[in-house]
Image (cartoon, rainbow, N blue to C red):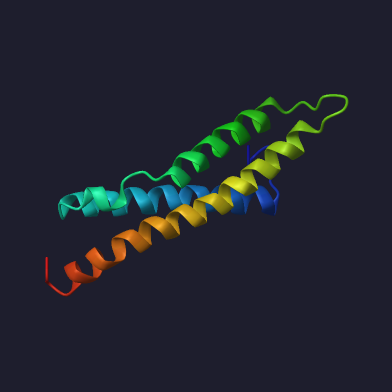
Length: 109
């Protein structure tokens, strides 16, 4: 999608989403190694973010507007919304894991 529409908006939104996916996956793996996987279990915001991503991708892949509706622009907007939700959900997961990460770093775990 970014290759077919190389705008800054699409590139930044996509980079935020991909970066968060990698980071939170790594965080979850690390927390699982510490026996604290439940601290970063999937939250409702993560599920909603995923739903927005999927809808945005499907609408952007369709790449055809209806006569009365600019679907591609709606898809772009949903992708930006997904990127905002991505940042929000990442903050929630990191905030939940922070006390455990701090204890692990200081050797308390």
